[in-house]
Amino acid sequence: MLLHEFNSSDGWNLCVDKDRAKTYYKRSGQVSQKYFGTSGTNSGHVDGATDDAPLHVIKIEGEIDAPIFNLLSILYEIDLYKEWVPQLDNCGVIKYLGDSHDEANMKLSRFRFLSYFSFSLPWPLSSRDSITYAFVVDRSDYEADPSILVVIRGATKDHDNAEIISKYDNSEHVRVDIDYSGFLIRMTSEHSCHISLIAVSKKRYLNSISYYLILSVERGSQSFFCSILVTKLVDDKYELFISKLRQAAAKVPNSVYSERIKNNDQIYGEITRKLSKFIKK
Image (cartoon, rainbow, N blue to C red; front, side, top):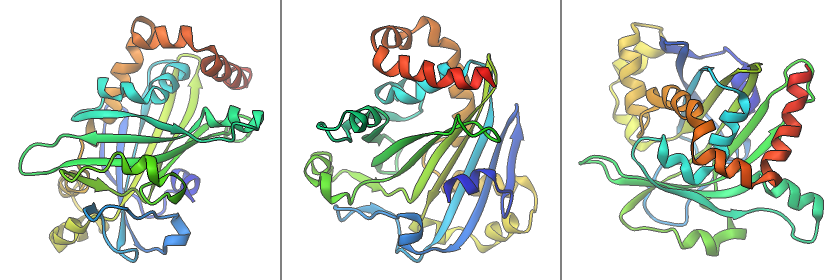
């Protein structure tokens, strides 16, 4: 379903189009929990809604003037997201997921993990946090559309990892529950790439947005109203996403990323081998 959303133009309303980056919005109908893999939460304080609430979907895409390797290293080093994501004050992998008795499965676990993120937001908003499950899908063998897909969903109600997740409960934070989201990355040349992000949420406070703004977006009215809605939909600054990625990607060769790349051939050697498929194409 996530890949379909990346490639589909159905229902998307263009909100922002500038500097080779675009932001889209759409409001989906009621979707069942089993269809999207919606997760709940262990804590009582959740920034979400009931399972039959409408889905609010943001899609952001843009060109990155840096090799795809640079971009993948930025996305992989989760504890360094603080270097480029506004208002993010704590982040990191809390568990790699894999069978320690299965070599092939352990290899996959390097690209499948649970992560924690927390954001400090200005008053009167409360701080937010989230626990997510992410895994990488290597689509470089697909001749029609070679790409790397990163799938992300909320993991707050992951019973298999309940003990470690409970260590990150914080009564002062609003736990953001993620229905589904992800990145799709395509190589456009040896020195550039294209990234798309989709984020889906069911926010209670969205129901208070004026009906006029909703209609303005759904009927394709002025982008000004669409931009207001996008701002209300997200807690962090999605409009900075592409520009921040560009800045970070440009600094990879002379930064802490280069040291991690040098000292982690297990990960970055594997990424290099995967990317050789793109270059050959």
